[in-house]
Length: 216
Image (cartoon, rainbow, N blue to C red; front, side, top):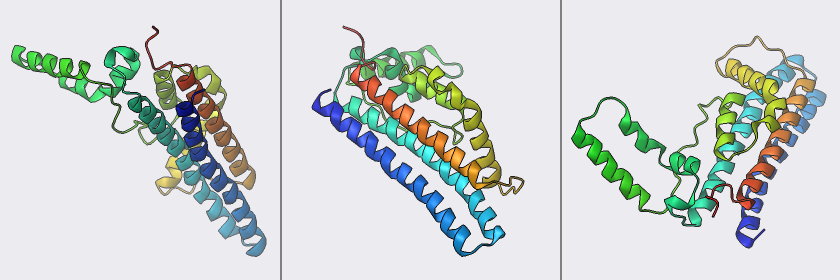
């Protein structure tokens, strides 16, 4: 692992650390509320509030860690011929929107010219990381594929992750049908922390093994 790769790992670990620390504090704060106030209404409300926060840290880590990896690739100043088709396509994803619908021959020529300009420049990955604001397993699967990460490593989290997203959506839309226990919160924090750790390891492997680059 060279200096740049070590720096990348440190950035990813820092992104993980503050989130895991906050998730840990969420549990400690609940214990304070429960022991000090001893009012069930407060406990129930607090537990319901925690779910969107847990989800926010999950989506937040995925988005920010991908941005860190993309910035690492950008700094390498690679040509379009040096990166994999997946990375090249993702970096220029917006360009393909031009192909929607019918086009005249002149418009097709214009697109070809613009695309050749892109191919003659170094790769630069920009823009929003698409999570559909609902980072279920199926959305995660698409993002994992970009880094050639085996989605089977995360399959054990599929049901839990999709359930977390569904409960978060219900709470965010003002529904109060879910009665959560502290054990439910602990389980969700535990599996999200495990998911974050697993993703961090896979992202570092993606960089160290240079899976973003075309084999020479």
